[in-house]
Length: 218
Image (cartoon, rainbow, N blue to C red; front, side, top):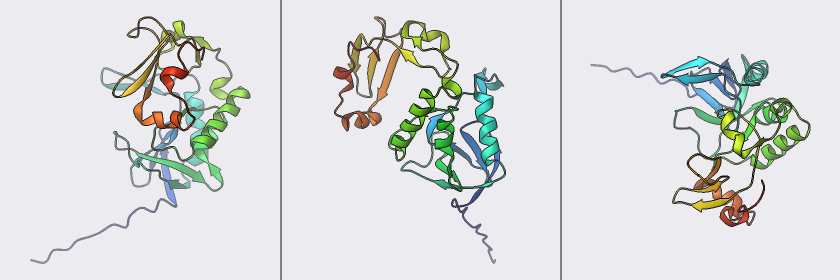
């Protein structure tokens, strides 16, 4: 019996069409794969309730999705990958370019996304820090209408992108991460978690989070 095999041509990510914008930081490509932008997080359009996603847009989520849609939907983009190319949800992770426009950076510049770096995918992290700093200074997008939240009130804004200010009362290093505790009860009070894969970014600056941040207002 003669067997005939067909082999489809691999998708060329130097020019790939965007067929759908899911939200501010996720798109669907012509091969059906979802691609998540590296280095940022936009406000959520949907909440997960009882196993289903329900439309419940956070502030600026619709603006971010619409801006992303206007930039890339129906157009051919170039995708650049970093060291980790796929997340646990099987989404591709990439830096996206439309001609000279760096989409990831543009969303941060416009204040429609917050910095969200996950080592080892940190190729453009310094640029992204600069983009967000300028957006905050210029009070653009998500940085325009929100006051800084005190650590003891942060529980009121779970699931939202907010700036929080408070004093680090205690620190603790476990096998997996460093905890910066802003209250006396680490199980209930606001806590910052720095995972081990991100600690190298602090060490390159000569910072030990456990000692550097303790008793400081940040």
